[in-house]
Length: 121
Image 1 (cartoon, helix red, strand yellow):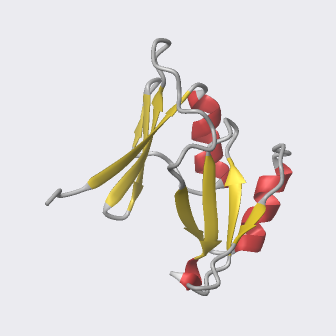
Image 2 (tube, one colour; image 1 turned 135 degrees about the vertical axis):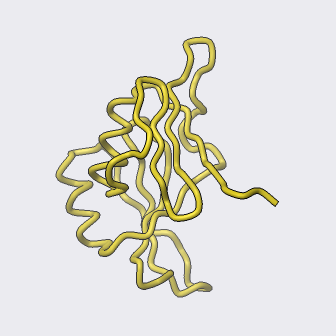
């Protein structure tokens, strides 16, 4: 069994993605921060951003992998997200079977992620 998990997202613009996940999603300061790798500690796992090599293009937006972040307030997150004037609409996710209110967003490169209130965890 692995002792820890790390999820890696390959991105074209590491600086923009770092700022987005740090400031808008609210992951805080990265525990590792370089010009090719940014790592945010999330409890027992890490969420990492990796600068895509020119020979390795990032996955196209809307791939099969999505992330779910628990935030203090979904409404406050929506306000921070909208303040950045990202294009595209947020989209409610049907989660009636779990009782979770989740909303799907796209980061600056179009990678999809979901956000829900912490009290639903």
